[in-house]
Amino acid sequence: MNKIISFSKRRGFVFLSSEIYGGFGSCYDFGPLGVELKNNIKKSWWQEMTRLKDNIVGLDSAILMSPKIWQASGHLTSGFSDELVECKKCHKRFRLDLIEKDKCPECSGNLTEPKKFNLMMKTYVGPVENEAAVTYLRAETCQGIYMNFKNVVDSMRLKIPFGIAQTGKAFRNEITPKDFIYRTREFEQMEMQWFCHPNEADKYFDYWKKERINWYLKLGIRKENLRTSEVLKKDLAHYAKRAVDIEYKFPFGWREIEGVHNRGDWDLSNHSKHSGQDLTYRDEERDEKYFPNIIETSAGADRLLFAFLCDSYLEIKGGRTKTTKSIKELETVLKINKVLAPIKAAVFPLVRNNSELVEKSKEVYRLLRPRFVSYYDETGSIGKRYRRQDEIGTAFSLTIDFETLKDNTVTIRDRDTMDQKRIKIEDLVSLLEEKLKES
Ligand code: GAP
Image (cartoon, rainbow, N blue to C red; front, side, top):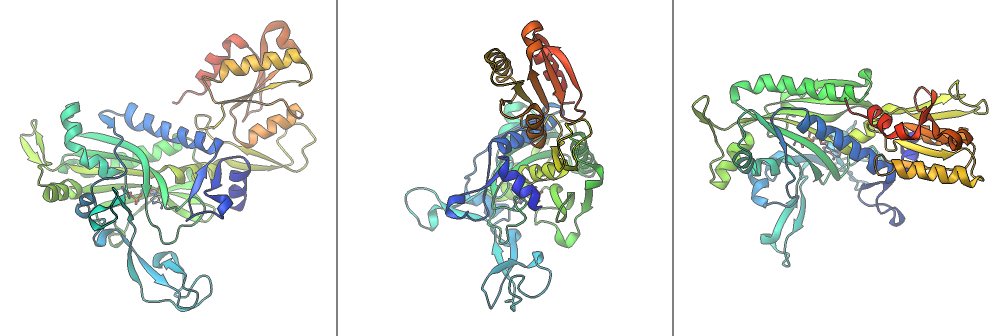
């Protein structure tokens, strides 16, 4: 865990937010490589959930919404609270279900009786800070989807079953944010809501559970690090009739990375009741009018980034066999799926004191840069440059040498096999496109 945290900072994946002021509220920033990785995760999810599936459309709804939504959804009533306890000695506060004993985890002091603590982040909208101006930062992105259920059906002429997908920030005033970026107060969700006939909810629940697991496996998460766990009735969220957690084996144990939920008609019927608007669906084929049931898939982009880093970070004692003999200590390779790799191609001149090689390398770099995230590096030995790229998971490294100047070919090296072959510069773009294509 500590290795991943220091690696994330050292190589520009994740930084502590407001670091020069000592950090702030367990918030994190994503650095130059982190933002590329997170974008690639979201892109792959979007491709999977909107382009490769029938009848799913996208949406981007506002973070700030009417507070009436959170009343109707149950988030402001008893539904969205955690049990909070306070240490009588050091006055630190903890989430009851996240502590192991009935003593303070910091100083072993006695704890107060648990109190309900609502997780919604409050803010004011407009120039007057009074009760009438109070609203909340959204705690789950899906409420924006329910708000637009009718708009989307009408504008896109969708027929049930269909889905609406959205990615975006969500906020929760977590009592105990912990485990690096696993549990934070600001995070990004990738949610899809599948609207179906109530009789088909069970069928689609099973379908989406399988589909979501397959996506992780397709992206190379190790099978032994992935499992599902049925949520016990007593632990179900207030909106859920049934839920399965998809869990990843983090260094600190098995933890949820995604939830598949059967929300029944909780959301549409409650919003109908509270807004006075009819949110039923007129099913012409069945000649029925009903509240569709909702099967939700809900993943956290930040948690997934963390899981992908843990899953692909490898330290190899003594180095890999085909690398230069001089590596005596540890060699680090981020063996992440190349579709997710933050940098796709690194370009090196064999030596930096030859202006022709440098100019040719920059030409190749300029050719690739608009199409693939690329990196130019001329410092240190070629072996060192390979290892610096392997450590951050760069998919391919290209070396420009004296042969290049004669025949316009470069050496392309694959991060995983370390195989090298020569290829014509004119074929580079199509080769990389082919190799980096999502299946
Ligand atoms: N709309 C349903 C919903 O929000 P959830 O199980 O509360 O369900 C779904 O959250 C996913 O969002 C989780 O599996 C996790 O990946 C992510 N998530 C939730 N709370 C988080 C937090 N405090 N920090 C980071 N990710 C979080």
